[in-house]
Amino acid sequence: MAEAPERKDTDVVLERILAQIVDNFVAGFISTIIGAIFFGIGLAFQGTSEILSSISVLIGVLIFLAIFFGYEPFLEYRWKGQTVGKRAAGIKVVKENGDEIQIKGALLRNIPVIGFIFPYFGFFSYPTALIAIGTSNKRQRIFDKVAGTVVIEE
Image (cartoon, rainbow, N blue to C red; front, side, top):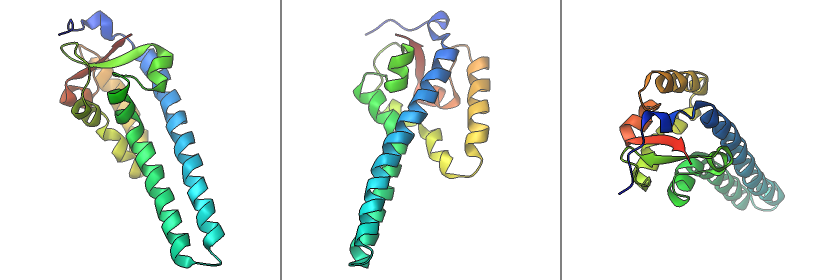
């Protein structure tokens, strides 16, 4: 069992912001490229087979959504609490007791990402997250508390 992080270990607010910007760019870029490939395949089939065209576009949309919404929880679990952005910023997610994050914690702490399918959610979610981080003893967002996780310096 690892040592439980203290308050000073979680004072990584600017690093978290940097990591989120990088992760949004990476997830958006990858999902857009892959989605565009399948959309292009769908357009290529449009004149010959409407079914293949529709299936290709649907697959593209599903892959886009899977990457966009699954990027952070998948990498946090597989890369021991890190994503591309968190690695770049030198931070990682751990359980409150200091142990490595598990898939359940990675999924729970990233539930707010699903809210981005609703208009204006992102406009409110980032300020809400910053307020929660600023008022929490261990700099936790609401869903970090639900998941029992904290973000610490690597």
